[in-house]
Image (cartoon, rainbow, N blue to C red; front, side, top):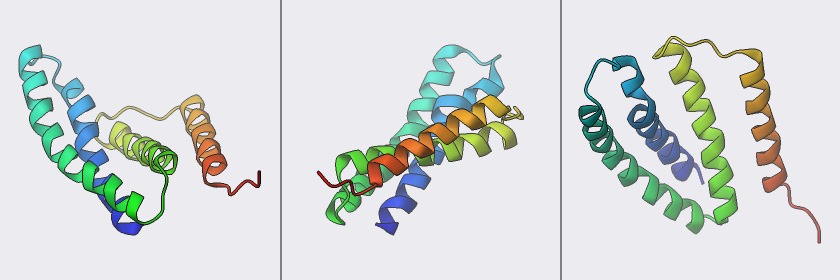
Amino acid sequence: MWPAVLLLVASNVFMTFAWYGHLKYKHTALWMAIGVSWLIALPEYCLQVPANRFGSESGLSAAHLKVLQELITLTVFGFFSVLYLKEPLRWNVIVGFCFVVVGVAFVFQPWKS
């Protein structure tokens, strides 16, 4: 499972820059921001696809992989927002992120049917 988690973290770093990195350069032409974002997204897919494959082979379901990816995305985005975009994480955003963590716990909990 750990190779999948590490690959998901790496892929999320790339995707966060692809999706939000251009916000720091609002003066750049939109077509250029789109092109650069696509170039950044390609390595993201090269990491994300094997991550999901390895995770599936280690016994994680698609639902497990998805909520794990969301948790990693929020964590990476939190650091990105504060360190790169210099935007503070307000209390309501942190509470919202915590609700996602609760959702992850529910998905990973082995409920008896």
